[in-house]
Image (cartoon, rainbow, N blue to C red; front, side):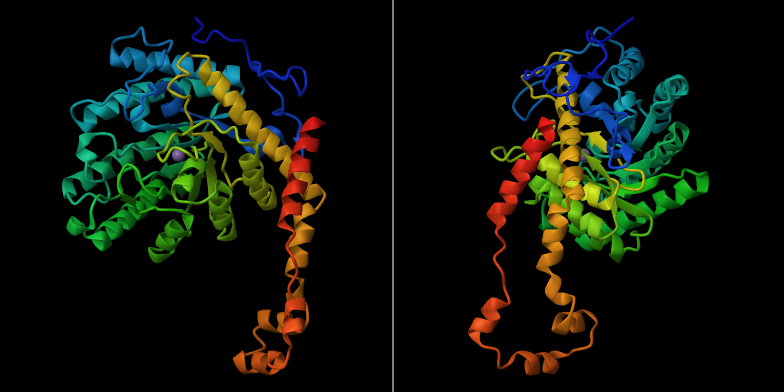
Length: 447
Ligand SMILES: [Mn+2]
């Protein structure tokens, strides 16, 4: 039985059709570029929650999605049918990875024991499919935000029973991660923040969050679940302020609580925008700190102020993101590009899920091709090294080596004239740089 009325998505190459078709024009999974297969550079992952569970609601509208397993009215029957639909989807799309929350897979019972039993039935089926398909889990995670019990947070809830419940739920989620061989484990602190400081003990809540992460890491070690632990920053939504605000804030938290040895970051384009940053900025911050773990692939909208999780289509942004990845040589030790993306509410037919992944995968594949070409030609590398070359000798080298103090620098500079100091700076010609990048995008993708 087939759930999806579409043929397998293959690489067809550019220029066969300017109109989007059911094929990739830039993503050729087994093509080796920059020393690696494209599939190994990009490690695309389908997100279970947005792809199979998202009903396409928005803050003012009910779900519009039409899905092939809607005919099953019993929640467990539907959950099991969804696994069949999911694995057919992965095969037709040609991805190697998927990602899921615990609550995506199976309905909750009245107690955690019942909930875990529902979940285990679905995981059994997933594990069977993995044996025959070789599908890998990029990461799994625990949904500690949807249920009303998490109204005031999970690990940062002021209510100790909720902390304990969260710990027990996460324990089972880590055990599932081990069963499915998840390469990473992600924590997105859905409601780990505050609505108001007037009733919040922020320091105590953050200490609780740190304790929770340490307990999780310790338990993963105890059961031999060898995943890279990842924290996912987001500045707001659903709370007024989320503690994992952005990469820099989260890194400071990780260092404060001694988590930076065991945890890295999972960064998302839309979350970066909500924090007032570009995706590239967030990736650069993590890369410079040696803490880039994995990427969630989506984009926001400059005109809409909330988290819309749109499929990535902005080539300029994917070039910038992949430029950072290419400079690092990989997304992260075990990172990938997980499509934390969903169709617009008005794109409600089943095949829109394929079209969304096609534009997303092709946008990142195009970004990779352009970024590798920029690197090969050393376009920005030379420009950046030239810009800082005054630190390679003379006073600059002495500053970097810590050989001069303020007094020495005063002696060195005090009689230099305005004209001499002006001559020490150079125009950035930023407009030329942007024009050059445009040429690389058009040229590389025309070949
Ligand atoms: Mn995400």
